[in-house]
Image 1 (tube, rainbow, N blue to C red):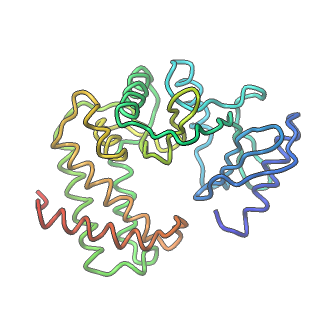
Image 2 (cartoon, rainbow, N blue to C red):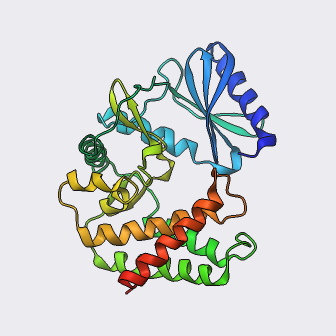
Length: 280
């Protein structure tokens, strides 16, 4: 979120919490990217705040409720208030349970894989309209093609990203394997280590596709403990996801910490993988 918007976003979250009977005298910023994640005190609620124009909060709230009811390992909405989206001063705010992190506990790949398997099992039971994973790839392709939004991207790198995204989108799509509802970005930053076990957060990226697309976001060792993985599809998804997140880092509006440095590093990894294996 733009630095100039943060004070207003914090004020909106605190005001909404207070209007609902939750005492919010202070706010700690836990994460700041496209949305702001706050811990409001002393009511101890987690607030997610986003500009009205850049959010799918209603979809996330409804999906989180349904997944929680199915026993899936997802973070829950705060039970003290009505589960809904609140709007104030140009921001939307959702209120969630705050989970105290379990200190000094390393997540094992087996536990990570088991939690993701449980999430996928619950998601297979739901019939909700969601984008296909190729829609998200197309968004990355459009960004690569837009010189105004990616002005610092060199032509040779632009060609590399465009070719990688287009080729892998086609190859994976043509395989015709099983697809289902996915988290979309179950990377470690979207996994909480809590006293209730591992819980997934940030469901706004949900899409449909092969489970290997989700596994490509997790640490490499996780897939070794997930049953029935197609290793060829996983390798293709890994490179596809790497090309996608590299593309986001070159967006002139990207606010990811050290984003440009990571984008440069990841371009090198993509080029090495393409040189080693080629693109079909």
